[in-house]
Amino acid sequence: MNKELVLEMKNIVKTFPGVKALDGANLNAYRGRAMALMGENGAGKSTLMKIMTGIYEKDSGEVIYNKESVVFKDSKDSQNSGIAIIHQELNLISELSITENIFLGRELTNSWGKIDWNLMHKEAREMLDMINIGDSEKKLIKELTIGTMQMVEIAKALSQNAKLIVMDEPTDALTDKETESLFKVIRNLKKEGKSIIYISHRLKEIPEICEDITILRDGKFVCEAEVKDIDENFIIEKMVGRTLTEQFPHVKVKLGKEVLRVENLNGKKVKNSSFSIREGEVLGFAGLMGSGRTELARTVYGYTKSSSGKIFIDNKEIKINSAKDGVKNGIAYVSEDRKGDGLILDLSVMENMTLSSLNKISSTFKINKKNEIIEVEDYIKKFNIKTPHIYQIIKNLSGGNQQKVAIAKALLTNPKVLILDEPTRGVDVGAKKEIYDVINKLKKEGLSIIIISSEMPEILGLSDRILVLHEQKIMNDFPIEEATQEKIMRNAVGVK
Ligand SMILES: Nc1ncnc2c1ncn2[C@@H]1O[C@H](COP(=O)(O)OP(=O)(O)OP(=O)(O)O)[C@@H](O)[C@H]1O
Ligand SMILES: [Mg+2]
Image 1 (spheres, rainbow, N blue to C red):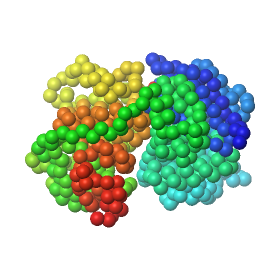
Image 2: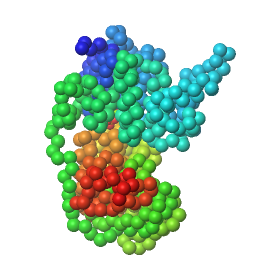
Image 3: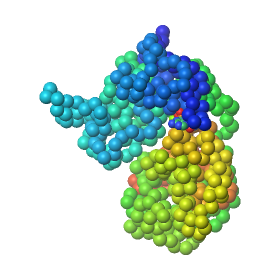
Image 4: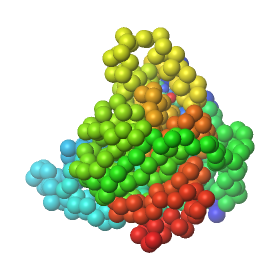
């Protein structure tokens, strides 16, 4: 079959102060096909897409769209030419409804020129049905789960009836079911002759949904291939420029004393939960979306108030009424929603990392700026965080590097118990391995770690013990030696 080129990006170069984000990047998109765009965190994928859609200006290179050389002035301009982009960061206004968000800036009007709410609600409903979202179109964004928000973002792009649709990590926050709905939509779009550019760190998705693949490394074009001709190892090797050894080297350390004990905890979406964790132990929270893993973690940490139950640290009962109490007692939590409540996007790497530890440091001593800088730079090295310097504004870092900053920020509070909620969401294979290595290192140092993850291999590969939740209750709690994927799944769906 002949492939018809819709988009050609050639030799794109883009420099930000102190960063060469793109250094000769190429990308094609073909009619009726999906092109996967892969590369490590910071490889330049999002930047390339922002250049294509007119959000950023390139330093040099050429963009050819529908056989014509183009330069889009801004995203409106590219939209008018039939290009839609679903950004990696959610771009929704939380105080507005789903309908209002979908039609923001291009409201539909009736023949009198007045905004036609009925029509917009109707069309929004059709979009939501298409992607299997049951929530009312009149619901406010802030009332939705992150996954549904992401689906609304997708609906918004679909409603533009674009010919070329860019999806920058669309499944990052989606459940398996939501992902399946999205894939169905993508298949239909392809049948209609539309082109997709698909960015994802989930290797398994690529053969399922993409025909072609382009790999970038350090802002440079590495290769383009047809997905049917290559395999996972090829992708990883081209992405990281080396072969990766075993993903999960499970480290067994001698467990120390009990650090945290939770007894009969109740609260919002937490039902009579009891568990404990020892020094050097990694406890995995498994369960389906909505099973209450995050709520349990947040209640232990103090982000959500408990209604009854006891929490002990080092065998002493502590009172936790707010997240501050959690930090004070040595419990740190890294949110699954790093953009929403983990990081402050307009502050620098340095400011973000020291945000939670600031209180602690300044209450005992005057803030020791020099020590702080050393600590921050230590973490940048230890986690291999890609940033030109510590004063870089965090939103200018790539997604995966932001996640590493969020983990470093929690560690700077010197916790006894570190809770990581979906720590590798949106993180590339290379950086994932780095985060796993960090977890193992911290474990050897005696830290107690709770990991919440929807990725089964991650839970199985890192945990010493696994706790499975079902409908906000702990169904089972067992050592890793007894764990199998099947057993966890059974418990997760409520079978003992
Ligand atoms: N507005 C900006 N100002 C300064 N630097 C930036 C800006 N946007 C991106 N960068 C830098 O450019 C490089 C490429 O970033 P980009 O976001 O394109 O990576 P990515 O491939 O999308 O990564 P990820 O998989 O983590 O999303 C990174 O080093 C990033 O820090
Ligand atoms: Mg990106």
